[in-house]
Image 1: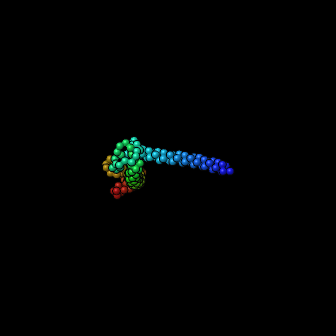
Image 2: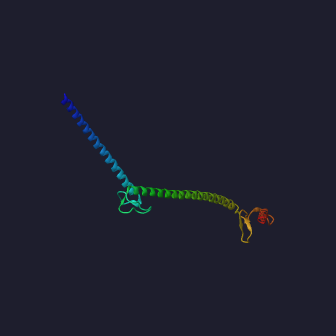
Image 3: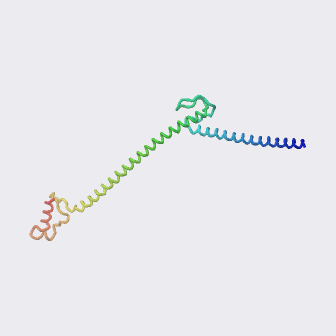
Length: 178
């Protein structure tokens, strides 16, 4: 009976050790995968920051001054994070400036469009006025320099009666009034 109990304990213990080893190996694999993902993410971040492009990720080094390339050929993770933060802040300021420029250009565009509409309105009324004045162009200057109606004809029957006809008298009155 003792041997049976000891065999079951040994078997149970052996099974537990095997399960524990399997779980440990699985945990180690997951941890390795997590570390590799972090490492790849740092490489990607480093390559996205212009000041760090071409640098290698290394162990912690003394920080370099802002705006300069990292000393040596290795950038620590802390340096990568610092440079990425600086670059993000720089890009935010740049985007803000560009947005202000866009807003200014939109305002200028709106003002110019208003001016175009106003000028088109003035042009339209000037053309309308010109068409009205062209209908008044029934007056023209005769060779003697006086304004004569284009509708006045020397052969008008009224002009033949009594030397100076009624139409001619009306025209003289009209020219004198203008």
